[in-house]
Image 1 (tube, rainbow, N blue to C red):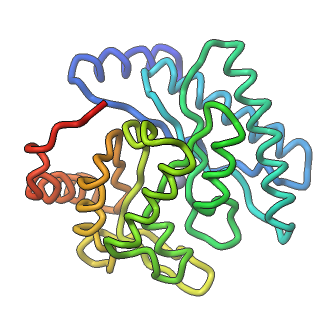
Image 2: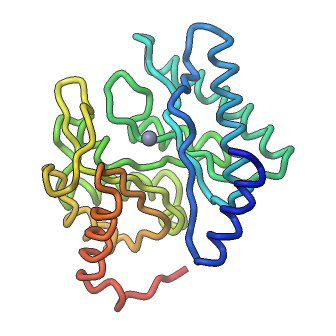
Length: 241
Ligand SMILES: [Zn+2]
């Protein structure tokens, strides 16, 4: 994306009152074995942060790394080291965008709820992007009812404080999965994803921020989520800052 395009997106979003988030390219692996792949990953993250900042996005997400059969703790330390470098660079550029590693759908990918909560506690400007469909896929179909969604919000709140629930970046979609986790995204109604329970948990935890629909039928499912959410009577609840 050219700078002029980013400026135009920023102007249009402001005019229409639309909140923006960004997704970095998929070709990122901070645990790559080759240094040039790591350098390219860092550059893609910095480039996304700069353009997203110009667009006026408050948050950007990305798939941080693959385990590459390494010990998850080792991968955690590597990801942490590079994210610290990146946030220092962004600090120099006065770019305060949230850097959000995504809760990933495949078991070969770095990014469990626990890893992301811990990482966010240790690196400033880093928060989890909670992908509830990926969480369902990588827990073999667990994490798909009201109690389990609530536990995710509880865990997030415990790690990052109650205020963090006011500014979240969340993904949902239907999902097909197997023993290794995510296979592909599905539209909500052709999947088992329990979006009604998910939205009830969002209401009860007074979740604020952006929920990005990543279903193959983006607009249709985004509207379904919005209408279902409003059907829960959320307008009667007032957020307490
Ligand atoms: Zn993603």
